View 1 (cartoon, rainbow, N blue to C red):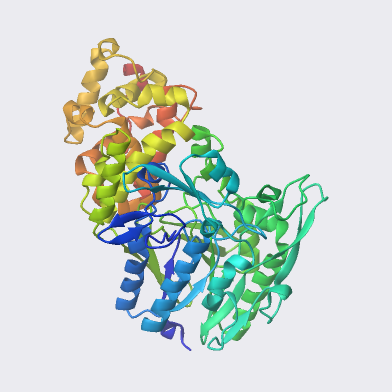
View 2: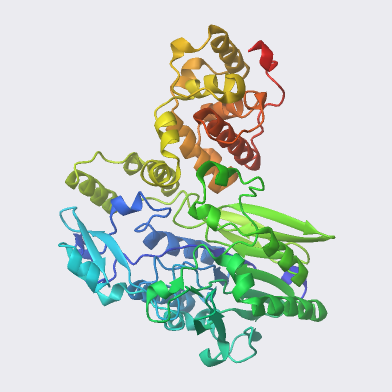
Length: 583
């Protein structure tokens, strides 16, 4: 088959499907005669993904795929909310419905939210009651006994390998008669017993046999989909019971860094697949849940300098991952996990590896990818779901919850589209997750309540070491005049800067970081002009310094913003404002 005749593939990452109409073992909420299992806004606003909205987002993506005449769909892991038995069964029913009705073929690979270790783990989540109060629904008897308003349900349990994969067995994980070819790293057998590997604790005192779910499938002649199970569950030192969750290190922050150590057989297999593909004239597309190159391309370690060893920093693949995969012959890899839109590249001795990060359906920006395989690099398009309408029943319940807790309604409740809702959700994340969990407390105290005029004045301070909270009266008049002069170049006013807050900037910073150019429609022209001002000549006064003071922190933070803007196609004005001595 010629390359241009190969079929298009739709790629969905991190759908995190939650079954709103599912039975999780409690009474739920009555909405228009239906009993719904609605997750709380209190947990949603502190999570990097939304929950209830996934119930419409995944079918909407599948409908779009059907409308485009695409038959093959890859799910890059985290297809469930958190691997709950009820949720996994619901995903299977949904995929099976589309398989039967529209002849879609699915190829799934598990993510860190779908299965855990060999025997699974408990899950506890906050749901809403009819009064708007929170109800904990858990599979853990100890949690149920310790909380007065809790429900115990076995349907909340997250299974491990291989039990948690069995509902998905017809979607690539096991051989099907319609495939032209199917294999695992261990050979042509798809039996669970033949797909085992040994993994040991660092001290070598505990060794377990686990299943690897990787496979190679040829759905159409000439096209090989290399589905790599990069989940790694490493036994902890001193733990020997495979039935206990604490025996294994969660795969969330492990990814390819741990895979190189604990699943080296996959590297040999990947190389072998690419060697055979070259001989046989096959086109190979590689997929796993985790990125093989940092999707943010933060080669300077700026974010680690700002926030320390955050979850995001822990999830960054090391340089050796790309170097190793370049040696296997891999050229293009699709990843999820980080809910980011981005393409990054690494080259070595005339070879290039491209990692294409696929956004989530339940985080900003909501989107999936369509790839048209080609002889060299494939043609890839992003399909957004931002125009989707919101479910008014969910918004009403969120308002009821806020009223029950004595809180003001979140601005996200007043948005008019799914994309705007997720953009506003990012703002809630700044307040309820990023500031309290990741930002240095002294920095939050210094910058959280200031406006962007004050930020501009700080950037004009010598060495950018003045505290952000310096009152206007202490700022030399000359600096104010220089800031007004710079504002004029961007058709801005001091009042415009003053009317935009640091919270606005931080929200846009995270959205640009995750979405690139897809964030631009959600950011006002005025704020983009302000960011060009702040990341242009003002920022060029001195090189980034270790972020030990609020001013130095801002400088590194704005250098990151400059990189996000450039990735989105927004260039800051180049050149120096004035020699620093004249300030």
